[in-house]
Amino acid sequence: MERTSEGVTCMSQGIYPSPRVSWSTDPPTPSGTLQDSSQPTADAQGLFSVNSTVRMLGNLSDHAYVCSVSKEDGTGEWSASFRQQEDIHGEVGQTLAIPCPVPKPSLQSFTQTWTFMGQTPPILTRNSGTSHRDISDLWKNRVQDLLETGSLLIQNPEGQNLTGTYTCKVLADQTLQLVQTYVSIKGTDPGSER
Image 1 (spheres, rainbow, N blue to C red):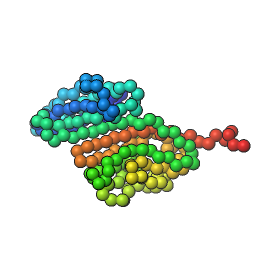
Image 2 (cartoon, one colour):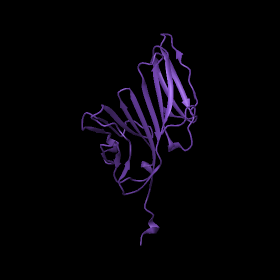
Image 3 (cartoon, helix red, strand yellow):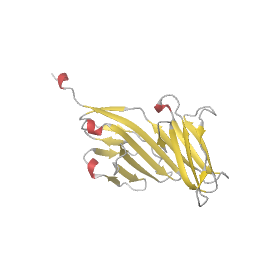
Image 4 (cartoon, helix red, strand yellow):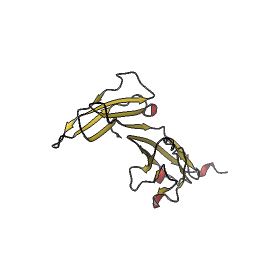
């Protein structure tokens, strides 16, 4: 699932029999509001792929877009959601929390991954079944913690090099959740000191 210039796109492949795609939003919108263009195609082995796109409604952060893909017979449903959160503004020297809701660990296991501007390796990866957090070397002095709620705490943001889009990906049993947040960090204005 990804955001494109046309809207939000959901892709799936290697499905048999032919898949069925449905879209919804959170909060819900009236039936028929979302118009998607999806047509499954089969490869040489008879496995189907589908690529479906819907246009965004209103402001970018008004809705989460949920794509559900199931086999034609209604079994094997997978769902993915995409949410663009409102921008977050921080200042150099302050700790900044970037929210990303995760499932309650007692309900299901999941893997959470944070990335910055699509760079690899990811900032941080964790599995719900363990308290271990794998933080990349580049971010060890910048990441303060990862809250149980899934929020990423960045300590002492250094300015422009931390300004950009942060993506939180939560992968659980047959579900994928993507949350993107644009963060801008502004420096201290020397003219404001007395």
